[in-house]
Length: 134
Image (cartoon, rainbow, N blue to C red; front, side, top):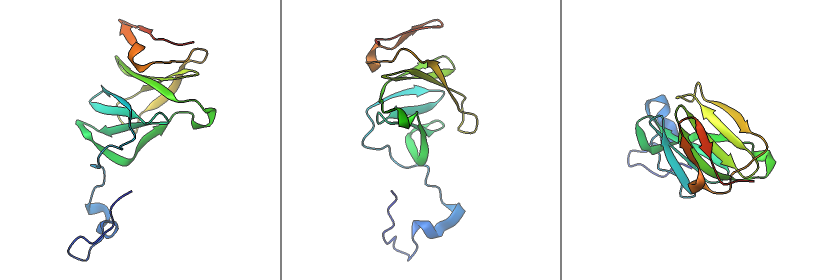
């Protein structure tokens, strides 16, 4: 994923060790929808949930993603920031992500019976979420 070509001083990025950060990478070109939540940019390629660096919405690390039940065969259709939770709508069920840092992110099922069919349909009022689903 990283460019390991000649850098001009015979040093490859892999040789730089802990002194170099690769967390400021550009977003993937396959990302389709995204929202800002707890000072991060969360986006999806319909398979995984990617998140940016804190207060740096354009910087994505190579390992800054969360797989949302990849074995179920369903895709992510919507993301919605709702207070302290990020709601993730797959076509078969609804998930939410709590926490504000990768060290305390917690992924749980919000609704195991109803999925989401449209990102733009996800709206919330107070503590109630509405979406177009099954």
